[in-house]
Every structure is written in structure tokens, then in C-alpha cells.
Length: 338
Image (tube, rainbow, N blue to C red; front, side, top):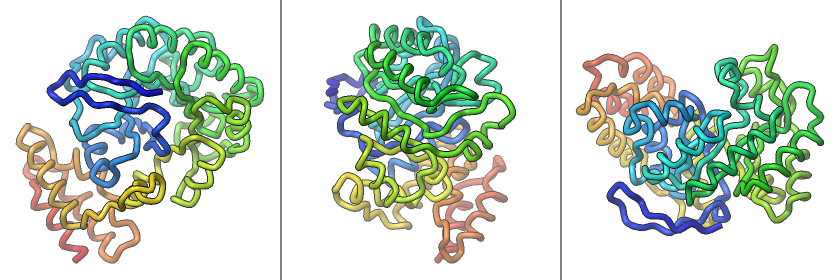
């Protein structure tokens, strides 16, 4: 699906191809994939589809929109993940978000946290596929963007064969452009969100089977993917792969996405140039009243496995949090590697 859309915040008209051009995405991670994290990731890969943290529809409608939705023009392609269960509120939030220049609206049908469940959205919506379909249909009516869904293979005692097919049938009929499937069940009672990312067994074959059934639909796979090799293996049987925690804990994986997954020029940005770019970005954030740690907390895993990586982590963890912490802390941490 190709979408011609105008960026309404000063950028030029850009022709984005969604979702057919996407082979790799960085998963939306609550508390992690904020704008600082995304700026950092974009320095490492030009091609990966980025996702925001989940933002609740009510917050978009009633909150400080510039604070919640403002983008850096370098973030594209970028998708906004919305949480909610009221189709009209979700549609209104999506309409607002389109004005900020997002390329895709994604509906969260996979988060298993208690807080999300209490709001009647996230993974518990797997139990209510008609509501999910109504939300997709309502959003499609008010935006020109791609509208996608991120879900699980099922929840609790649901039959994975029936539950996932039922949801897929309904969202495709509602006009959904892509389905991202975390290849695990979510247990809504008895497991924490962290446990729900590890304990339920992965069932990649269930996602592959879904793709075979809907061979002409875009289906991306998520869950437990840790390497470029594994991404390539999944791309044989699915349209795209999505990686979350592995990227956060070892961001250097992203430096190989453009060349290994998209066949484009390898990212040759040196470590020193990367740190310089992040120092410039952090300095602007600090000047606007922010903390250095808002930026550097996403960089902790950058030099995973390298000599000096432990000292890098220690300096950033211990010295970047105070009001007086400036970019000298980031430079000091980097010098520990040299």
C-alpha cells in the first residue's frame, strides 16, 4: 500500500511506501521507545520502521499534544501505537496524530499489563475481535495513513488456531493494512508483563501458518528474535520481523539492518561520530530543561561486549542523572572505551 501524504509541520511532501517496503521494525516498548530513543536508533539505521511507546487515546485527545506527539523529522518512517478500546476515541486520536506527520497508526492488542487491562485495552482485546475491527474501521475513515494491529497469538485458554484466525479475519475485513503478531500467548492472570515476554512458549509456526492462509496480506512476526540471522530466517516465511528487547540491550545490531536486511549501503558511522551526534542532541535537550539521563539511558547497551563497556555503563548510570550532568559525562563515558 502506497500512501502519499504531506508532512504538516514544515517538512516537504514525502512519498512513503507502507507497509510493502517494510522488512524490519523496532517494537513499541512502553517506557523505552520515546523520542530520545528513536533519535538514537535512527542514527544506527535509516530503514527500520520505528514505533512510539503506546500512547492512550484519551491522553492524545485531552493531553499536551506537542509533548506527546512531536516528532523529529529524522524519525521517519515512524508509527504511532495507540491504546484504547473506544473506536471513536481511537479515531479522534489518530486524526490528531496524522497532523503531526506519523506514517502509520498501530492499535495495541498485545500488551498484557494490569494497568492496560484495567483500561480494557491491550492483549485483553484478543477476547473482543469485533471491537478491534470496529476500531480499525473507525480509524480508516478519518486518516489517510496505514492502519495496523499488533497482537498476540491468543490469551489465556483461547485456542490459538481459532482466536488468531478470527481476529485476522475481522481486521482484514475492516481494512487493516498489516498485522504484527507476537508469537506468544499472553496470560492475563498470574504472569507479570516481564514474565509474559518470556514464560509463554514461542509459537513461530502459528504465525507462519497465518501467513500461508493470508498470503496476500502483510504479516510481521515478533517475539524472541535476537540476531540478523534469525531476522533473515523469519523473512523467508513472513513479510517482516520486529525486534524489541534485544535491540534495546544491544543497539549495535541496528548498524547491520540497512545492509543485511535491505541490501543497502552499510552504516559506516564511526563510534566517535555517533557519540558526537548524541552529544549535540543531548545538549539541545538539556538547554530546553531536560536531563542528560533522558537521552543516555537508551545508550547503556551500546558497546555491549566491548572492552570498557562495563565502565561505560557505570559512568552513565551513576553520573548522568543530576541536574548538573552535562554532555561531559557522555564524553567521559566514551573515553573509557578508547
